[in-house]
Image 1 (tube, protein in one colour):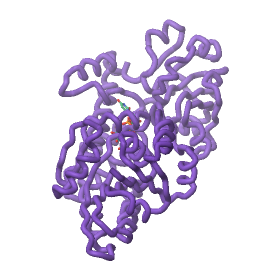
Image 2 (image 1 turned 90 degrees about the vertical axis):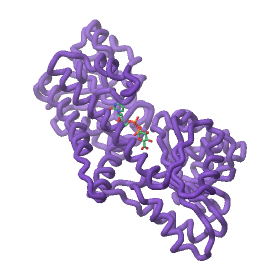
Image 3 (image 1 turned 90 degrees about the horizontal axis):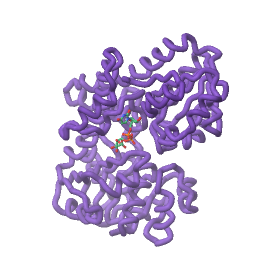
Image 4 (image 1 turned 135 degrees about the vertical axis):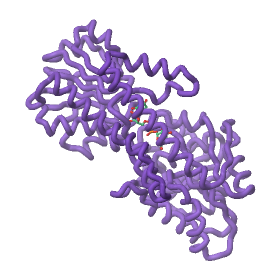
Length: 429
Ligand code: UGA
């Protein structure tokens, strides 16, 4: 099929590439001409495992192309996906101006039937607004359908998530659009759920909020483990073995960050408020999440007493492992807090340093993970990179002034660290 993706950010680029990989002909549109030029030259603006190879392969096969012309995109694609940012506003509500602008731009060049699909994370009832906008700005009386098709990929495993989805949600108010969307997703051999437009939009916010709730729940249980001497790893394994609960998203740590959960939670609270429901449960999820960092810093202070003039090495800046994304990263927050309190910080991240240098020039970076350990009074593990687990921790111990580790992601084995002679602290165990 011929498909168009408007917006070549994380979601748009990965989605477009995976659609091409399963055999569709895909046009990716972005209004950032520089980005389009880079993509045309095979330069990928984000780090995502497996993505670059797939982009190059599908460009060579002639199934994936990039343009800054929305006109060309709408002409080329029988289905047009909107995958533009929906950033938060100061009051927690969602800025839908990019979605609205794309809807107007599509309307202006619409000449024959198209399925317009919203893939961006949007508040319930946005699809209705998109349809209204297209109708208003369209010069002819051309037929179209608006569909909601939320995306559930995670950064760091986006290609794998997209190629093997648990489910595909299609919110369509008519059979014609639903049938076309089923054809789009047929090559993925995944369960397809057809819902109405509003329900599909709600599924996305409700899912992300529920996952964030799982994380805050386990972080709250971790506090009880610390107070009682129980082990959060064992508790999470025991809980997670129950199929009704599931083990995923029960890893205690510094709390969730990133460009999705914090934003989607406050948006969902706001959407619920606007619809007349006080979602106080989610407000508590946010509070517990914010508290995780404070509790961790308190633990560090209780051991180190003061941070001023202490050499602290930090491993991790990205908001999670396998990504270069540092947006709303708790690792960045902890680095900033330690710097504010006078610590002499050195940080390392396998992929996140380039973006960190631009956004947070005050955070000192080193290009070798072992350099953070040189003469260090303590090491903080702030991101769950697998690579950190595989470091030579005996070498690290020898480089440090005092062998103190604060593992904010429960990445390392407490027994092993103690055997190596470290004083080791983690979360909930
Ligand atoms: C999240 C969802 O998992 C995706 O399904 C969704 O599509 C995406 O948001 C989105 O809305 O675009 P993402 O933010 O990429 O994906 O990353 P996650 O793997 O969900 O991690 C989010 C945060 O939670 C990270 O800071 C991570 O360190 C933290 N986390 C995750 C925990 O603290 N504990 C866990 O057990 C799992």
